[in-house]
Image (cartoon, rainbow, N blue to C red; front, side, top):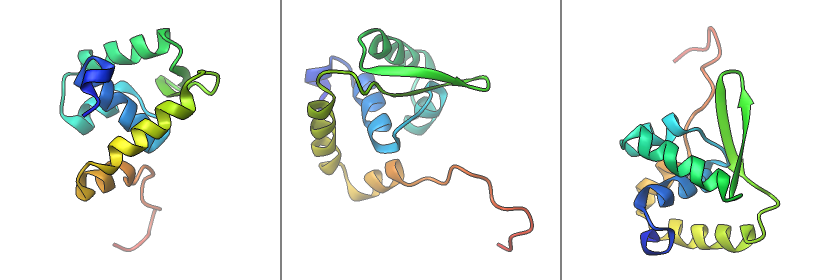
Length: 109
């Protein structure tokens, strides 16, 4: 949907994923969208070099989040929110809601 503005569909996927989940890493995004890992990594690198995202190491994983100092962050987020509203509800829910922590030990199924 925003491919014409961002240049590639993978950049749109990365931005939407980070917008919906507030943070992410390339392998997670590639797995979620079932796309090529290297293409997603390239988009993360370009967005970080452009100042849109910044990264930090958590263990061996490099997590990316929106750069709060990016001058057009509010406008970008409002555009991504609007774009996300046009996605089917099932896709929106799948993107926003996903269990990230393991189940507590001994908890019944």
